[in-house]
Image (cartoon, rainbow, N blue to C red; front, side, top):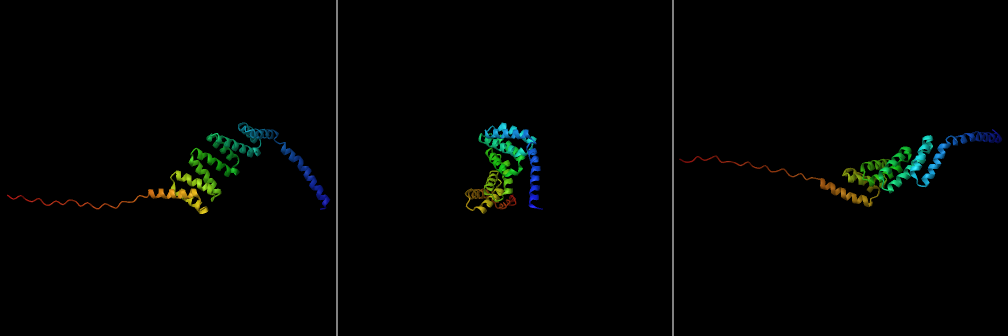
Length: 212
């Protein structure tokens, strides 16, 4: 094919594709309008309004789900700073549903909030998910070892702690925890007392007959 012919073909394809792209942009003008307004509301930290607008936009076109998830996380962060921890966790839950591909980030910040309210079972689950992705991440192992220790699950705490020390032998948190765990385990060991010596039964001498 001559260069001039190839150029004409490429130009023709470009021109024919252009209306299609424009049509795609105009497919959901209302959704786009709502998304723009939602982004502006988020910029002004009016997160309730931003969530409402972006929920409507996402219902019309799912491509705005990422933006909605981002605003949920912003609102969650603000709620956590105001000590509205339940609201924060709810928003992180919604963000996770919308963007499972961002799970690592959401698990981490949600776990931090769960630790604040001492919901250790849920925090444990979040850190376990993080450790699946990064099995040698000291920060996550330390947190999970700490939770296990609080729950008096010393074996699992010790296992995570050893992993930390394997990666970082001088980790101060892990070294202190190792001493505590070893002390607790030592206290739990019960020394079995020796069996008692059999007590001899008293012997009775036969009664002597009285002399007449």
